[in-house]
Image (tube, each protein chain N blue to C red):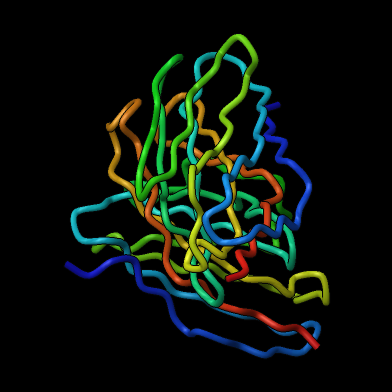
Length: 112
Length: 115
């Protein structure tokens, strides 16, 4: 079945550092890929998405590129802020409008 | 425009009891999905409702059941609660027929503690 593997956390960075959170997936067909963010005590918010190979999703300075050849969707940001501290989840959806399959999440802490 | 709302926010139950959680979807959405998020884990899909019927189900026992009402709101029922049912229960809504543009919008969740 479909699965998502995220890099182990937690990740701690200094403010203005570069961020990469790795995500790889296993799926049949052509899934859509997502990054969700969960701030403390809150539900999930969609951060960005990509629906086909070589698409780049971007939002709030975060980017991720759908790489079909490496089955990856790594999350990147050039300069992180304290407000980016949260748990980040990579997810996929296959065949549209059905369940999301999530990775285990990566906790990111940014220190001033 | 109200987003996805869930009630209650927190709930404490005893083993063996039954619980009902409620969800109102984002305005304009017709599909509701439920997820269980154990501490430190990613959300796990429980089931999805569309047109008042269960459309797809994840790997959860029959103790987990649901319902969707004509106004698209939904309930999640869990019978014979176990300690392992303690988790954050997330409701997500979406609009059917979006294909590759599909997106799910999540509510803040209900934190269930079973003692």
